[in-house]
Image (cartoon, rainbow, N blue to C red; front, side):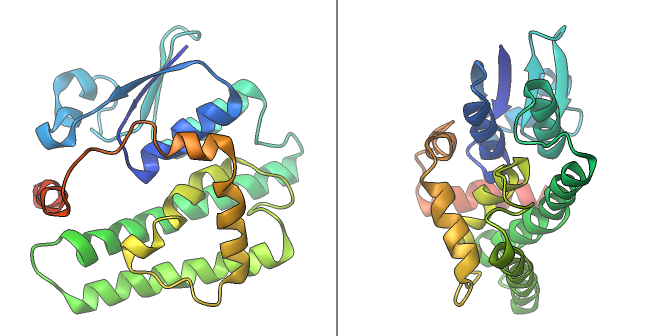
Length: 222
């Protein structure tokens, strides 16, 4: 049994999708950002960085893993799924996983903050992160013109990590025009039952846009 500590964010959805794809039994513990539950001592004992997601593998001596990329690698190695054994193919998957971790997620996250939530509109910051997000999308589009999936012709944890972010491109204000191969990949993954289940696990909070903006403003100004 896996205990999943998470929230309804792209980083959280990566792990719920992976758990569904891998057929692992898991329990969801939804953390409430509105009350800063992720910063409370109980959760900091699991992840000292105070961020979701994190897991506890009850079948492996209550082993704790935090950071979404590390969790995906751990689960892939645990199950032998979505990470090839061949060293070169394995490296390709890890490269595209790191591309998401170091590029797509951080740049889109900053685009979200400055485009949607920051108390002051700073056009230069909005443009910077949206342009960089678009550039990263173009890199993926070129790769997906040659391959069905990001790391080649097999669906892997690189796709699982990246799809929950790309699917919210409109929220980040990043234009997908002309990126036909990326759009094809986005649409194909949206048909996977595990992806459909993963992006509603946990369910999004029932908040108005104004309430959500206030909640995130509180987080980004701390």
